[in-house]
Image (cartoon, helix red, strand yellow):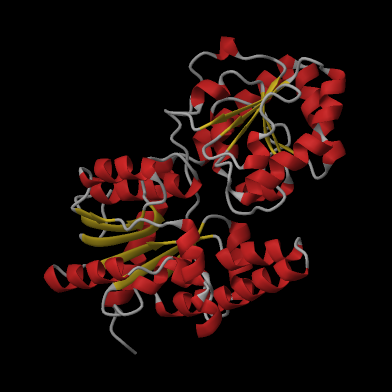
Length: 407
C-alpha cells in the first residue's frame, strides 16, 4: 500500500462518502486508500441534498479539508443553459463552481499538491490549469456515450439535446485524455470504446471492487424462495428504465406462475414512476435504506435488467458477493468480462430473462448453488484489495513517466 504521491487534491462530482451508490463506492474506497497510505488529502465535491450535509461532516474527520458547494438541481439546470451560448457541453457549467475553483487555487498556493485525482470527466475542468502537477482522470466510463445512448432512445428534441451533449462532451473528454497523465476506466469493454472514440490514448483498466466482508450473507435462512431484488439509486434513468421495463415485460408472466412472488426495489430517491409501483402486484419500493445486505438476505434471486448501461455494475457484484444468483442483461453484465453461465445468467430479452428467473424460482437448490459459485467468483476476482493494487501500479507508472527525461 504505497505510491509516490503524498499530497492529493481529490475531486469528485458527489461527496465520496458513504459508499451507498456506484460512483460513491469507488470514490470512497480510493479516498480511504489514499489516507491509508499516509497522504494529505483535500477534497472538492458537490452536495446534492440534506443527507449530504451529514456525509460532509463525517468526511471532514477523514481528510485534511473538504470544500463541498451545494447543488440545487433546478437552478443548476438554468445555469447550465449558458453552455448553449458558449458552445460547450452543458455538463460543464452544471458542475462549475467559483467556490471550488477558488479552493483549488488556494490549495495550490498554500501547499501545492503533487497529484490531482479527478473522478468523472466534468471534474477535469478544475485540473486544466495545473499542468505542473500529475493529473489522473478516472472516467469510469465515457459520460458522452451515456448521452449518445439517451439520444438513440429519445424523440426529436431529445435526439437534438442529448446528441449535442454527447458530441461536445466527447470533445472535452478527448482534451482531458490527451492533456492529463493517465486515464482510467473500469472494464475492458470500456477500454475498447475509449480507444475507438479517443485516438492516441490507451486508458488503464481498474475495475470496481466489492467489500466482500460487508456484502456477505448474515441470515440466509430468511430468504424467501419466491422473492426477487433490484438495488440501485432509483432516480437514475438507467435504473428507472430497467425496472419499469422489467415490471411491464417480465413481471406479469412471473406472477402468473408464482402468484405470491415479490419484487424488492431497494434504493434511494425513487422517481415518481418507481414510487407508484409500491404495493402493486407484490412490489415493495423501499426508498432509502441504511444498508442493503439485510434486503439481499430476504431475496432468492437478484435482477439487473438494464438497457442503458455499461461498465461494471456494483449491483451485480454485490448481489453475487451475497451469494445470490443474478439474472442480468448483456449491458449490465459485459463489464465483468467472460463469466461461466453457471455463475451468472446473462439474458438478452424478456423471454430469456423471464425464463431464467422462473428456473431459479422453480429450483431453489439450483439458485443456492449458483449463488455460491457467484460468491466464490467475486471473492477471487473483485476484492477491493486486488483493484487497489492495480490502482497503485498505475500511480507508479505516472510518477515514472513524470520523472523520465524529456526526449
